[in-house]
Length: 312
Length: 249
Ligand SMILES: Cc1cc2nc3c(=O)[nH]c(=O)nc-3n(C[C@H](O)[C@H](O)[C@H](O)COP(=O)(O)OP(=O)(O)OC[C@H]3O[C@@H](n4cnc5c(N)ncnc54)[C@H](O)[C@@H]3O)c2cc1C
Image (cartoon, rainbow over all chains, first blue to last red; front, side, top):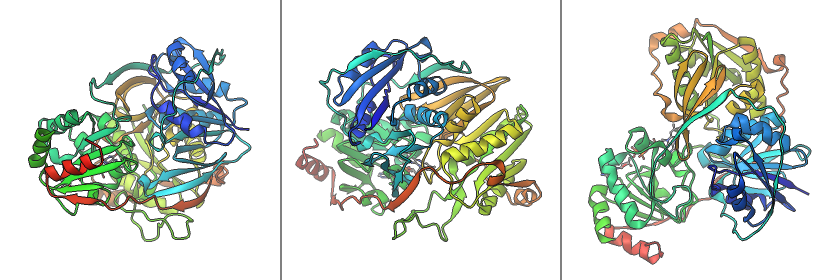
C-alpha cells in the first residue's frame, strides 16, 4: 500500500489552492492513503481547511514559532523526521514546493521527480522537460521513499466536504538559525489570482510601457480576469515578476487565456498549454503564438483592445 | 570572501526547438547548438560583479559532464572566471549525484558562496542548488533576483509566486539565480584568447567517489500533446462573437 505525506502550502492562516491539486494527483496512486502535514506557528485554521479536502485521511500539525514563515532549511528536517512509514512525499510545484522539496529529498538521500503531470504507476510518473517540448516517463526505485512535486496546472482541485482527523505531532529535531525571513513584498491586488483564475489576460513587449499596460488591466477587469505577462514585459518593468507566465514563471490552466502582443516563444507557451481556449492578438500573422491559438486576430492591439473594452 | 564557486551546465541552446527521437529513447541532440544554461550565465555574471566590487578574490567555474563541457567552461573563463574544474563523466547523472559531486568540490575549495542557476533548461528540474545546500548543511536562497553581501551574511531578494521575498542568510550559502538578477556580459575576442591560458582542471567523477548510475530511470520520451488548429477572426467584433459562442464572455 502507498502512504503519501503531502506538505501543505499556506500563508499562516489559509491553505493555498495548490494543496487541493496535489491531493488530486496523489489520490491517483493505487491504494494511496493520504496524510497532509501543516507546519505552522499556529496551524488550526489551515488544518481545518486541509481536513475538509476529499481523500485526505489525516492532517498532522507541527506547531513551532520557527514555522511562522516557510524557510526550506527549517521545514526540511521536520519533514524528514516525519517521513518514516511513508512511501511518497509530495508537494506542489510552486515556488514554495520548488524551494523546499529538493532539500527534503537530499536529506533523505533520494532524487526528486519534479513537476509530475500524470501518474502511470505507484513509482512511474510523466513530467515535462525542455520547456514542455518533450514529456518523459520516469520510474523511481520502489524500495526507497519517493519525493515529488506536482505540476498543479495538470490537476483539478479535489472537492471539500471531508472531515479528516487532525492530530498534533511533536517533532524533536534541531532547527538551523542560519536563515532569517525579513519581509514579503506582495503586490496588493483585488484582481483574481493568476494561478487559479478561470480567465487570464496577458500582455507582452508590444505594450511598450507601464502606462500602456493599463489597457491590459482594464480589459482584464472588464472580463473579471487575472493579469499575466511575458518575460519581456516583466524584464522591461511594465509589471512585477509575479505576473510572468511560462517555463520559468507560472504554469497556468485557465479556461480562457488571451495573449496580447506576445510572440509565443516556447518558454511562454509552455506556461499556457493546458488552457481551455487560447486567444492571440498580434499584428504579425507569422507570430508563433498563432500556432497554439484557438482564436487568432491579426491586428494592432492599440486599435482592437480599446474596441474590446468599449464593447464589453 | 575568498572564493565563489559557480556551476555551469552545458545544455541545448534555448533557441533550439527540441525534438524527441522517433524511437522514444531521448531527444535529438546531434548537430544541435549547445550553450551554457542561461541561468548559469547569470550566476557567473553575478559572481564576477561581486569579485569586481572587491568582495571576493576568485571565481571558479565548475561543470559536470563529458569533455565537451570544456567549451562552456572556456566561455566562462572568457567571461572572467579565474579557473575551471570539469568533473568528467560520459554518463548522464541525476540531480542528487550532481549535488554530491559539487559538495566534494565545495569541501575542497571552501567557497564563501556557491551560485547556481535556479534550473537547467534541459531537464527543468530546479533541484541541484537546494540539494547541495542540504548536503552541505548551509543556507539556500533560491530564485534570487538580488543579493547584497554584508561580511558574514547576505540579504537576498527572491522571486516567489506572490511577489518578492527578502531573506537574510549566513555565509557560506548556496544561491540559485533567477532571470532578473542581471544581464550577462558579452565575451570579447581578446578574452577568448586569454581564457585559453587559464587553468582548467579535469577530475574524473569516479575519482571523487560518486556512483553515476541514476536512481531514476527515464523510460520513454514523447512529444507533447498537440493543440488543435484554431480559427482566425477579422476584428474585435468577430473575436467577441467567437468568445460568446464558447460561453466565455
Ligand atoms: C531561460 C529562459 C527562460 C525564459 N522564461 C520565460 C518565461 O517564463 N516566460 C516568458 O514569457 N518568456 C520567457 N523567456 C523569454 C522568451 O524566450 C521570449 O523572449 C519572451 O517570451 C518574449 O516576450 P514577448 O512575446 O512579450 O516579446 P516579443 O517576442 O518581442 O514579442 C512581441 C510581439 O508583439 C507583437 N506586436 C508588436 N506591436 C504590436 C501591436 N501594436 N499590436 C499587436 N501586436 C504587436 C509582435 O509582432 C511580437 O510578436 C525565457 C527565455 C529564456 C532564455
